[in-house]
Amino acid sequence: MAILQFPVDPSRLGDNDEFIALNSDYSVAHPSDDTSRRIVEIIEFISRGDSSTIPPENLHEPFVLRARLDTPWDGKDTVICKAGYGKKATEKLRKEAQIYNGKLSGLQGICVPWIYGYYTGCTAEDGRLSVLVMEDCGQPLPRSFNKLPQRAKKLMLQCLINLHKAGVEHCGIDDRRNIAIRPSETNMCEIRLVDFGDADDDHICEVNREFLEDSTEPNFDRVGCEEIYQVCMESEIWDMDHVTFYDKAVPVDQLTSAENLLEVTNILNELKEHEDLRDWEARGAAQARIDDYRDWCQDRKCWESTPLFS
Ligand SMILES: [Zn+2]
View 1: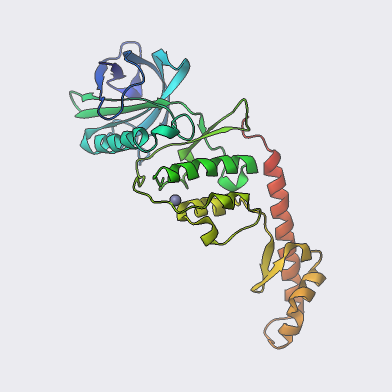
View 2: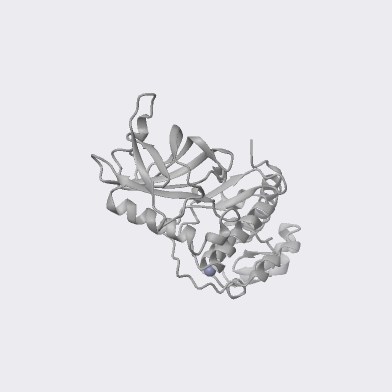
C-alpha cells in the first residue's frame, strides 16, 4: 500500500519535524503508482481554508499547499496537496476526490489536474487527516476574466463546457483562484479548473457549443446554461455591437460623434417634450457614452497584448 508521509505540523516543516504516515485510500482514488513518498518541503500555502487564520487554528476547513516530495510524480518537481483535519473536512475532500476520479476522470490532464492519490490517517491530536494530492497546474489566473486575451477566454470556456458535459457544475468559477494557468509550448497557455468542494455533480447541461462561434452577444437561450453564460458575460467574450443611450440601442458604428448619436436616436426632438431634460445635458451624455465605448475598445486591445506570464 502506498504511504504519504505528511508533516505533523505543516505550518512549521523543518529538519527535525515529525511525520504522520497516511495510507492511500484505493476506494476513493487509486494512486497513480505504488511508491510511498514523503513531503520534504512546503513551498507555500495557497489557501488556508475559508478564514484568514493559518493552520492549526483553522484545521477543519480544507487548506491547500504547494509541496516538494522526496520522489517526484510524472517527473514534476512539485505537487498540490489539499488537506483537512476532522470529519467535516474529510467528507468534503472525499467527495471532491470522487468527482475527480468519477465524472471528471476522462478530463484529468486536459481540463482538471491529474489526481495522484487520496491519503488518510489518524493524528494524535487533530483527529482524522485526509490529503488529496494532485498535479501542480500553475498559478491562479493573474487577472480578472475580462482582462484575459480572447484566446485564453476561449480555452477557459472550453474547459468549463467539457466539465458541464461530463455532468459537473463548478459552482465557484467566479473565484479566479479556482482557475490554474501555466505557459504552454503549443498554445497561448494551459488552463485547468480546480476546487470541486462545492460542485454539483448531478448537472444536466443544455449548453449549445455553437455559441462559441458567435462574435457578438447572443441571447441566453442560444447558450443554454446559466453558469457558462455567466462566465461569458463576466469575461466580455463578445464584441460590443451596440450601446444603450437613453434606453435606445445604438449600433456601435453610429458612435462617430455626439451630434450623430443625438441624430440617430432623435433624442433632442424627444427632449422638447420633456422640459426637465436640457440640450446641453444630452450632448454631454452623448459624448460620455462615446468616450466610454472608445475606452472599452482601447482597454480590450491593451489586455490582448499584455503578457499573461511575467
Ligand atoms: Zn451547464
